[in-house]
Image 1 (spheres, helix red, strand yellow):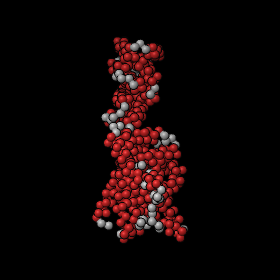
Image 2 (image 1 turned 135 degrees about the vertical axis):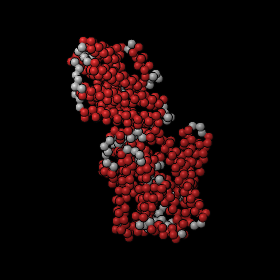
Image 3 (image 1 turned 60 degrees about the horizontal axis):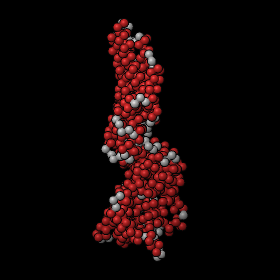
Image 4 (image 1 turned 180 degrees about the vertical axis):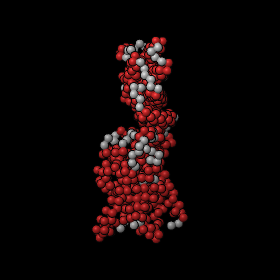
Length: 587
């Protein structure tokens, strides 16, 4: 084999890999958002997930791309690990479609319709259509289709060039000896694994193997372990994409590897056992020169047999993934890991994920505040420590969410998604401040406990009334935010007005008690701190309610203007709720 053939083979390989990359990237870009939405929403069962993974991979011609998408969804909490397993198994089978397309070049026959199926006949037509769409169409979707067609044409041309260049290897003794060596199953698996890990595409590796069949020196016996190694090597892309993700995402990537390794461990001994038992019958067949179609059959057959064995065992695969990557202790830190940068490519999904993480933050903040209110009645140092810890966690939530939302705001998205992103930034600030007030109230409770102070029965009764009102407004705020409940959100502002009224009334009553000598100055300062914190908590709840209403009604007004318009508009619903709460929390 001369230098000219070597250079020609390198050029063919480069064109083949480039064409496959362009075609896969174009297909993913053209159908990506729809496919991602489908993957995220239509995986309610393992079987449905399997068929989705099969279909998506057959469309975008890349199991690696599908698996990377799945890893991103698991990392973002959109998809569970069990759902992901079905999609990954489907993607493993879907990638075999490429090998069948490439095998068209080996079709024999003189009939016109058979000749048209050969790439030499239709590739130039596809290339012409592709370049016309790319150069003369202004619509981006048509340009994307043109890129896909050109990628396919380059891929097929590269395949033809590569096949022609390696044909001369049939006369090289070293080449024959190399593939004789690959009859050793371990070496064959290693060769396939390393090749695919380097080029990160099992379809490309199978295509290269098909091209080498033109030498007439590759037997079915030598290519079988290589194909098994190819299926292991393709896992490298998913494993790399899982770096820096949460544990469930790493488990999803590991399932991809576990499946292919176990399939190899089961099928490789089985293949050689059958070969050994029926050597006289199978020897001539497996020792024959491999063809494009034959490699496609082995590639697909390996995957189908693995699916027959492991599809009913998705629960076992899930348990193995948990064994390899066990659960951690810091659940809240893992929740913030759901903010995956890969979701920025689909802003609508990213906004939904931010809302889910913000809801976890809100629950913790409200829970912490409710706990601190109980400390005012009975102080406990362990609970106080937990409130401080919760406040630190809420701060962590705000930092991670805030940074992610700022990144998201720079992405091109719809007006609604953009508005929701901005409003979520406001909301997480309000929930963070609520957790700060939980610490403030806890410190007031600690001061009362440490100094052995006690409010007068009248002052305590008034304070309990205001605490009850604030407890209710917190519950309403959390419920409305978590469920996007407009009816509940409309109840918050009237109650916030009643809390303002209670603050003024409690201050007046406190001053009156000071004059009568019923209350001390020292208790007065603590009393003032408590009611001020309670009133500010209700203000933050009002801010959250305003954002909920704006996000739901797509209001163009800012939050405060929107709430002011409700109050100044003499809305009967607002007045009714205000009158109800004024009576309920009267002192």
